[in-house]
Amino acid sequence: MSSSVSSRSDFVRTLWPWLPIWLLVSLAAIFAHGPMPLYSTRTLAVAWEMWDHQHWIVPYINGAPYSEKVPLLFWLIHLGWAAFGVGDVWPRLLEVLIGGTELVLVARMAHRLFPEAPWIARIAPWLLGSLSYAFLFGLQIMYDVLLAVWALAALLCLLPDERGRQEPRWLYFGLCLGLGLLTKGPVILLHASLPWLLGPLWSPWASQNRRRWYGRGLLALALGALVLLAWAIPAAISGGEAYRHKLFFTQTAGRVVGGMDQAARLQSHSRPLWWYLPWLPLLLFPLSGLPRVWLALGSLRRPLDSGSRFLLCWLLPSLLIFSLIRGKQLYYPLPEMAAAVLLISAALWRQAPQATARTSFWLGSGPLALAGVGTALGMVALSLMARHGHAGNSWYAPLMVDAIYFSPVFLLLALLVAWPGRWPLQRIALAGLLGTATIYGLFSYSLWSKFDLDQASALIAQAQARGQEVAQEGAYAGQFHFSGRLHQPITELYGQPALRQFARQHPDSLIITYPNKLNSLVVRYAVFTQPFRGGWLVIRPAAAMAEAAR
Image (cartoon, rainbow, N blue to C red; front, top):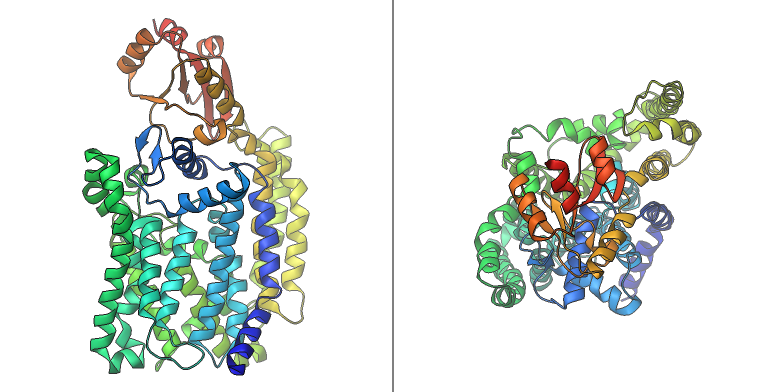
């Protein structure tokens, strides 16, 4: 018992100081502006519509059942709303807490995989928390970070514990898979079941007890499926025939191959087999800017220890399967970034004696320090170009103008990285985290006004309260529903004939459009205009649009 208490105490000490630092930076970043359209606003729109109309089982968006997603994240949002009231504060706090939980689980996994190397458990969460793309994506109110939490929790159940227990905890493994299924559907199996299938390659217990390993593993998978069906069957009955067909047939294949929605499938259907390879440096930045990391990975040799074999059985098959899928998005392999960081940490630990003796400025932090200086100088140059009229009318011109105010931060980060002394990897991780948060702050300061839909949402809410119909030209992704607390759907119009017919039927209605440029007719008849992303958001009376078209 005292050994167990001591182990927990040692683990709690490893959380300092990276967890408080990461939480503070994440909270500052996620509250720098409102929920981002279209991903965060769509999640909040579904949660709001379920809450507003008391659809506790079937997710809804824009007045129709939403078969693209399963409900666990929405339920977690509802729990906070029940306690604190409806707002966007709790969903953002929830996303930060989920991200922090993922980092804690990575540290826990390092303890299980490499009990002889406490250094790996101390450095791995630093490195994972510093990954720029994962940090930025984790600021969106979406499903993938929660999915990563359940994948890590499920895989932890397969590993030997600190007390020497070798057999996996099959009950918890099945429950974690079930919660992953309730988060984003069958895609959890791509993230969490492959190390189980390849168990004899890394686990001595699995190799010696194959029948129990696979037999009880199949029972755990069945338990996970039962957790999903406990929701899916009542949802199918409640949602109607069309929803039932989409839930069990039309959308299942899409969720198996990556949890893709319709827009993602249209954008990514033709990406080639090797598409992820050139993006790996971005996914692993700033670690990818350390030559020492690549040297350490290149120095891995057989025979590999059990922990490294586990990570390879998790990482390589997952990336191969995601590469074989025609639809690809950068955020699909985010749970595998934990495996990559753990493998990098283990490789650096094994290389540590040689690296300490001969790591030079160029093999260590030198390239990242120079990148920080180059970023600062580039931001100054961009700002000067914009101030002298070389930015044109580009939508990102405000960012170029304001970049000079943020450039000193990168000079300080370059100094932090290059400073000789102790804890070089922790300083690099801290610099990566602060640098990414600084870029996010620059975006919030300069460009958020082009993404902020609060005024448009309020206008739409007022129109619906007066009894006016509201429509949008093209697909609607729920971006106004939560911010405006809308109670009625927005009609989607495709093509000029549909627009003219809607205008005839509802002459006092409003129509939302997204033109690339403004012209005199658009400005003349508009009741609301604002820059939106790279174009414009314009709301016009339907009758005026019909007259302008004539």
